[in-house]
Image (cartoon, rainbow, N blue to C red; front, top):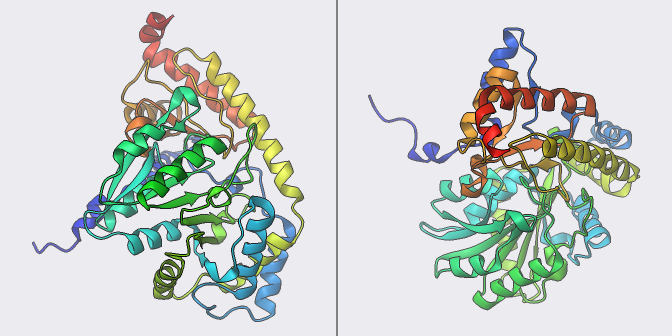
Length: 405
């Protein structure tokens, strides 16, 4: 048989949706599955603000139904520059902004732009899976740098420094962090920037959860950079509750001015290859930024209450423990005292108790022995899920739990 599929397909994995086919099969058989795997508020009791929905409809009526320019509507890029300045203190121009179909597309564009075969990009461990995937697909090597669980999953600066080589093209920061819920403190971000400056390395800063913060202060990487080029990634999915609309962006902030033009030009070339992001959705994105922001405070307060509930429940279950998340909408409990094979744990949990979580090892080596659970469902549903998880642990790991105690 002729080999049809390219080798690169074997490099693709996405742990967050890996067990979804099995969960759907169980649902078809009449089982009630509780989904705690995907960070989508709109799957629960959150909704896109009404003025954003109206803007989408209005945009179609006004004729915003054509291909936009590849880098995005001028008015949206100007709004994004305004938003970054107002909320994150980042001083960029519209010309430095490129609109994408979600942050996922931006990650692919960046990997394609930066990497030649064998080049390396440093990524936090654990990390959002697409950083591993797209780096490998474009013939690069993801190099994991440590984050310290006991220190709230803050990056290990010494480990970052030790991992830099002649092949290093960039350092990735995900802040607030997916999957751990960590928010990197200003001192840590500045230390990473110092290392990058020493080696003339770009920093890629994923800030999609920038305004979903609970007990910490978020500082944008670009706002702190004095001599390091930053490629910032952000979007509308999380803060503006527009997950299915697929609208994101990236920007180039380069205080050195050495790489600004070449990076913007290269990233726009990538954008041209896929024509454009959805034009009417871009029109709605303008309304999202310029319209009322009241929903953000309400959303964060709701997620905080659910975080507090989940953290308390996890702390009460023998064999589980967790660092308190400071941002985003995930908690990353440690189950290593009772089960090292977190993927097996997640599979058994789904089969036995019909609760779908993500195995932590899908986010990198340091994720082994952990689970990622979303904070988004109503407390009543979280209560049912945690009761099922507690029952599962007692049933399957009772002897190990008793030894812990």
